[in-house]
Length: 294
Image (cartoon, rainbow, N blue to C red):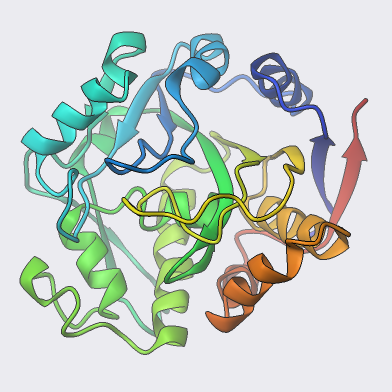
């Protein structure tokens, strides 16, 4: 596997999201799923639908999400659909809660150390391609959230999320916290589950990550810390491993005084292990060429 190309611009605008996607030189075929983070109720840092609108419209995409496995405003379809409306997603786009109805689509994991299968929302099968629009930031459990998290936890159904967090020990939402896997097993389970979505779509995948509103907490947190460092920019790639590595490297290279607070969150949770495991599994590379776009 040669070097992956990662395009980057510091100027964060909706039009530049479209511009960097265009530099990837791909046209996603058929019905396009656009994976975003809809934002938990009360969260102040998620990227709003108005910001995403030009990119979603450029691919004529459908916003896709799955229900959460922790209690909150998104753990049932009824509540999740209400929140999608309250946050403005349904005003702007077609929205699909992919695990609104069962049974889940079960994707096999070959040679998985932690998981043997991945459960995703069954509606994933209705799409020919996927654009993963990620808000890169910290995460209280994974260390950071980016493209790999969107592919894994983001596409997993309610039961799939339980399986990832428990290292395959349970599918029962009531056991989400009680049977949580050892940290490194959880991170490896994310890498394993992400691989199944990459295998499902093959080359019909593209990734754009916006490194802004850089809180140590994820958009899944109803009570999240405010951003601790300045915005970095927009990244685009066809490789989910490379784009996450590029975002991490940009944080490492920053001289922002808040950088160390974000890095402490990432490192304390062994966050980059997910990148390492994904690279080991072979569906992406940490070796990339950063192409800076003015």
